[in-house]
Amino acid sequence: MVKKKDQEEELYDILTVSLPGENIKINEAFITDFECKYKLQFIRKYKLGEVLQRVGHSGFCDYRLVRFDLEKLAEYDREGIKKFLAEQEGGHA
Image 1 (cartoon, rainbow, N blue to C red):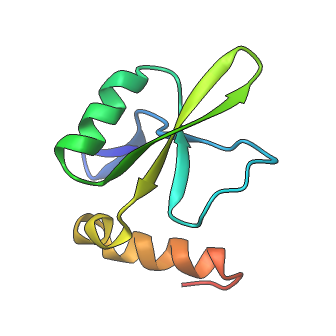
Image 2: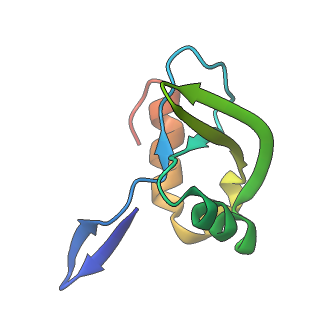
């Protein structure tokens, strides 16, 4: 997650985590465990996706799976979603 500060982008949180070996769809991601409850509330509040019952595991951590609504996310960052989809298909936006 990035915020703008004085016209510069600044990383302030990481929303998702990669769990190798987990078979998930292109619009799904596991949510990082740090402050997970608040991240899931944010996703629900703004209807950015559906929090699924599936939980991924790595080490001692559990991660909730979310199926994101890419059309809704595009309302906030159309170019970012276009770039993401192009990268998933092996191309460039």
